[in-house]
Length: 96
Image (tube, rainbow, N blue to C red):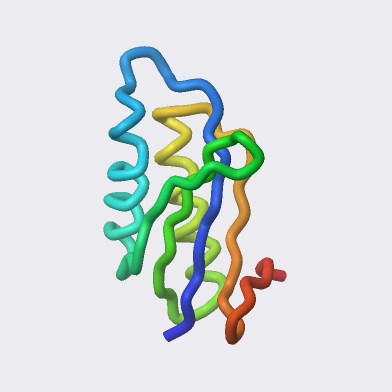
């Protein structure tokens, strides 16, 4: 089954949200829809980037899962940007 990932840049936290709760919430939302392979928070150019990697049978399903994760995380933080990509060999390509 193909591997996909949704990467998003979180902005300001909503009132009362623990920063440590954001990644687990994103992973839980992904698991509601499919098998989640991994989740990380990285710092890229001084900004946090949250990544949830997951499996999906096709691009439309992967796009749905990615949107669900972004919408759920959006209840906890302002999501500045997001993107769903598919793994092709060793590269990650944006969905068309």
